[in-house]
Image 1 (cartoon, rainbow, N blue to C red):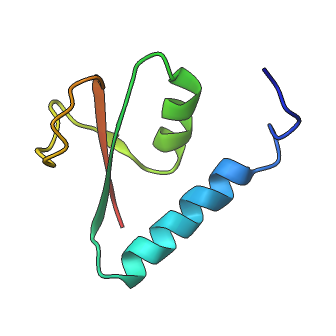
Image 2 (spheres, rainbow, N blue to C red):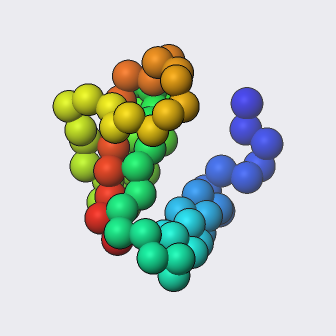
Length: 74
């Protein structure tokens, strides 16, 4: 479903803001978990410098629904 928001650069702006806030708060990395079915999102993450990990980082969330783990250095 396309609600007219695609192609406006909103995901890029949102990610840039996340990186800015994280860096300003002293974080050195951003970690995310996603699913293989979200290929378009994975492409965006790769474009912004996220690297694939071989296994998840224990973050205490206790879920295992995601099968792709990525990390970006700030």
